[in-house]
Each structure stands twice: as structure tokens, then as C-alpha cells.
Length: 297
Image (cartoon, rainbow, N blue to C red):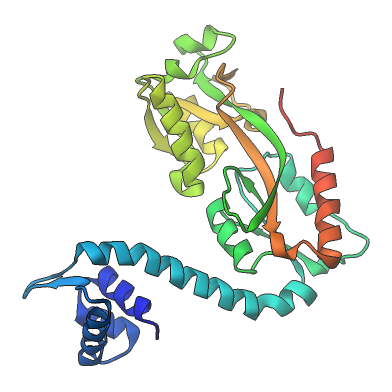
């Protein structure tokens, strides 16, 4: 067991006893290993008291690098373990529930002459989790929502669509042709959960706040639920343009004037997997996806 595993376990558990139990080693042995590590480094990683254990400044610097090291080691193990599946097993494609609504039925109807239907599987997963699964070799590729940032990934945009506001038909903004994002100030706004895509969530909120607008965001799973909450008069909703097909009496949909607020969908895979038959298959898939022309006007 590597030293970084020991330090991370203690930091996360806040106790040598609980960390030892989690790691399956005797507590005295864990203590000796940490003391040896600290002696080797020439600095203490933990402040020890009778009641609790806290990271020192050096420890706080050590932890992020240790976690990154563990993650890279696990990724390397997964890639080695899944290489046979990458080459000979079923083609595994991940997709996010928040991609353009036209894509999901298309993905389910995919038919490639060189790949049997039974040799291709689809997995619904959040974009952030999908990135991890692709990097670890558990998925061949993913169709998710940008931003996706990792230097080991090959990423191609498939299309984009703006956000629309879902409003009660008697709302003061319902009479306008378009609505500016700053007009959401003070409104209860229902939209997708941060856990679905943290980077998109944070960048959208940051942009709206930069306009001196302070909506009250409420997270809801699925555009249909957003529309239901709006229909019952609990607030307004922020949804991708493709979701306005889910019409319901008592609500109207209005485009946002802010073109920055949009959802971009992309296909991505590991750069080092773009070779051989998989390369050709992904290029064919990209061509088919881009041919849908899902860019919204």
C-alpha cells in the first residue's frame, strides 16, 4: 500500500483508528508508517491532539497531489484491466440525460454494418461521471454536455441550443418576445441539479450573477418536472430549447436574449484510442451525429 493512500485515509477519516480499520491494517502499524514518512519528508503532515487529528499546512499541500496520484494509479489499473474489452468486447457508449432531446432516440436506433446490435451498449450517466468512465476505459466514448476539460480527451462538438424560460402564462414576463437573463432577479427558478454537471451549473450561475441578478435557484431532475412546478405557479423554469416540446396548459416558453446561455453537446473519447477500427467507427458516429444539425437558431 502506497504512502499517499495512508495519508489520504487518515485525512478523510480524521482518525488513525478509523483509517486503520478502513485500510485493514493494525493501528500501531499505520502510526509507524506515518511517522516514518514524516521523518523521511522532514515535516509533520498531521497535528495530533488527544481529541482530534488535523492536517498541517504541509499536509494540506500533500493531500491534493496524493489524491491525484491515487486517481492516476487507479486509471492506469482500469485501463490495463479493460483493454481486452476495449478491443474485443461490446462497444460501450455513455450519454447524458441532459443532451439535446433529439439525440437519445437517434442513439437507440444506431445501426452500423460492422457492429452487431448486441455488440453495442448504451449507458446513461452524468457527464462528469462519464468523463471518468471514458478515461478509465470503462466506456469507449461519451455523448455529454460541455464544458468537458481533460488533455487526454479528443472532443468534438455535435451541436448547441439556447436556454429558454418556462413561465406561467399570467407571469409579467410572458408578454415579452424575449427575456434577458437579468430579469430573473428575485425569481424562484427551477432547473437541472448541480450534480448533473457542476461546471455548466457553476458557469451559468456565475454569468447570471455578473448581471447583478440574484435568482433563487431550485434544483429539479428533468425538464418535465420543471414545467410541472411552473404550471402550478411555484416559480419559473430554465430549460434547454429542445425541452419546449413538452407543452402543458398554463405555461409559455420564451427565448433568453443572452446567447451566452446555451447547452453544447459533444462526443468525446480518449485520444490514445483513436486508432484502428475504433477510430473509423467513432468518425462514422461523429458524421451521423453532426448530420442531425441540432444547432438551434
